[in-house]
Image (cartoon, helix red, strand yellow):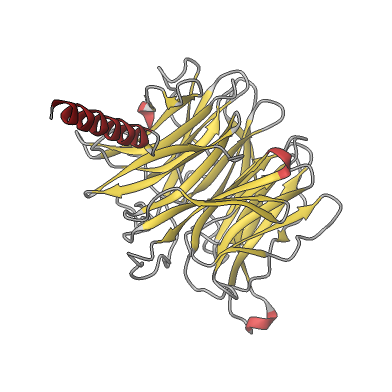
Length: 428
């Protein structure tokens, strides 16, 4: 009997340790436990370390602030979060994530949006940036990202990238021309050595007002920008379509080529989808991925080979996917993430909205699964579910670290939203 008890004890202990080990290898919380946190964004610092940023509500005053943390690949954990003190009262928006970037000299630049209170336009707001030269201990007084500081218009849906010269560039959607055109306008600006953003220029007008933009710098220093455009194709007999568009620069943002259409989906919609594009580049081409309901609804991707002037016809990735993001990895492969509504807990209602510059996070209330897909050329190398589909989990982002993929997303549980992350070996 004594021997039987010892055997049972060993078996129970082994099962317990195995269960604990399995849990520790699962998704980990990076935001503050018990605090609402949304809008993850991944980048790298000037040393090449992955950095995650997010927007978190402080329980003491119910105001949102931008936070970030640096990833340690040895421990496979993020370090102590840094709070951008000047971002107090920042606006949370899943398609217009507040974020940080790093100049080559180590200067940290935080970019965040805030609403203008008590204005006739309920979507009126501004984009600000603040700089730190001491790893986030102290921050400069916030400045406007844009030259126009009128309180009557909305501005948001911004993105940033590192330029080849060590500086940063930003793009955003701006409503300053809203009285004369339909939609917003796409603007670009870049930083200069020892200072902040300058050299503002309008790249195009008449864009969709509330889908995230994406800006990417490739290994040659070329700048690539994707956004959702408002178009009026003849096949729709005057109705508007909101399809993806692309613009690029080969001279560090001094000049830009004319706008190209990524895909003629002809999505006829009089509202805003709140789901923007994502770009990646390889030695072979620039690639784009996006969601559309034009034609067959779902997530698609396409490429623009360097020798061609037009994007290739779109290819489907998922009929159920939403909010895709993409990066390039080794061997000219592509890694994609998105969320899909759980078959056990189907979505109720639509995620579309009728106006731009939402003041709150556009989070889904339906349970969903975070999906990772890896393509090697046109061949699928991996397609796995990263979560079990029992909770609302959405708006994933990803980045590469050493030989791993680092993926982060929003998880809603017990009335709270938090930022979780995991790593995946794409070769296994």
